[in-house]
Length: 431
Image 1 (cartoon, rainbow, N blue to C red):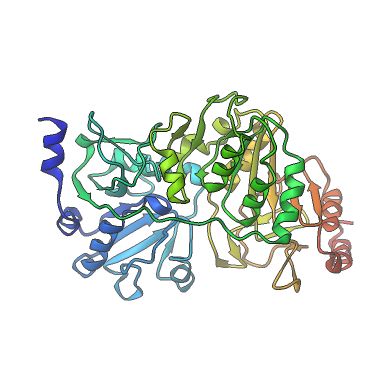
Image 2: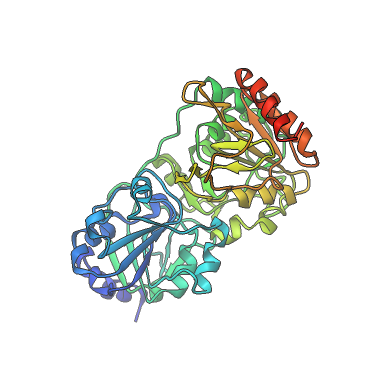
C-alpha cells in the first residue's frame, strides 16, 4: 500500500475519530497551539459518552467545553502547567496538577509513570515519504507517539513542516482529520518601563556570540528588544516566538558561534504569529526536537555562553524562587525554568537570569521577601539561582554566603522595602 493509499484509508471526520477513544484512556496533547481544535471540539461534544478519560497537556490555550466541572467523571484535564484556560479549574480542584520538570516528561511517559494511550496533535500535510511534522509541539508528544495505542492527527496546511526530530509516519497513525483554520496566533506581551529597565540590565551582561534561551513574558521580550545590536547570537530554547524573529531580522542571530549544533536554532514548541509559522516551514536553519533534547541540562549546557532568561513571582533572601504559585494557590508550573537555569550553570561562560519587578499591586507588596509566602512552591532552588534582576539592578548569588545573598537582594528591592527587609534579615540572623 502506498503512503497516499494509507492516508486515504485513515482519513475520517473528527466525530468518527472519537470512536478510537476508550473509557479510561489518557489522551496526550501537545503544548499550546499544537493542540488540535477539531479533535478537542469533537471530544468536548461527545464528552458525556465517555467515562474516566483524561486529557494531559502542559499548557492549554483554548477553553474547550470538556473543561467542565460537571463532567469531570467523563473527561478530566490533567495540567502539567496551568494557563488561563485551566488555572481556575485547578484552583477549584476539578482539574488535576502533575508536578514535573518539562525536560523529564518524555521520561515519565516512557517509564509508564504518565499514561499515554492516545495522542491528539496538530500536524503539517504529509510529505511524499509519508511523514507529517508536529512542528508546533514536539515536546513530550514524540515520546507519547511511540507509546500510544492510537495516534490521531489533525492535518492542517497552515502548520509548518519543520526539520528535526518532530516527524510522525503514516504507519504510526490511526486516524487523520483534515482542517484548514489558521493556526492560533499569540501576540507578544506588553512591555512597560519596569520591564524595559530590567531588560537593559540583562542585555548589558549578554556578550556577542552568546546562545539564548528566552522564556515567555514581558520581561524576557524586553530583553530581546535590547539585543538587536548584538552580534552572532545563537538560539537554543524551548519556545520559539516572534521575539526571536526580531533578532533574526536585525541580523543579531547567526548561530555561527554555537559549539553545539552550530548554524541551527533549536526549540521544542512554537508560540507566535502567522509570520513565525511561515518562517518555520522547511527552514533548514531551524530544528524542532523533543523537550528531553532541548531542555536537558547536560545537553543544552554543552553550548558555551548559554544565557537563560526566566521570570519569577517571588524570591526570598536566600534566593529560592517561587515562580508557579501565590502561596499554596497554583498559578502556572515549573515548566523549563529549572532545566535552563541548571543548563546555564553547566555551560562554560553561561549565565542564568531570574527576572522580576521589585513589587506587585502598585508598589504595595515587595516581591523580594525574607521567606517565601506559606505554601509557595519552590520552582528553582537557592543552590541554582545566580543572577537576579529587578528594575533596580542585578544581584549575583552563586558563591555568596547567606549574609551576602541577603545584602545583594535587598540592594535591588524597591527602596521603600529595603529597611524592613534588612530588619527582618537581622531577626533571622542573616545579617
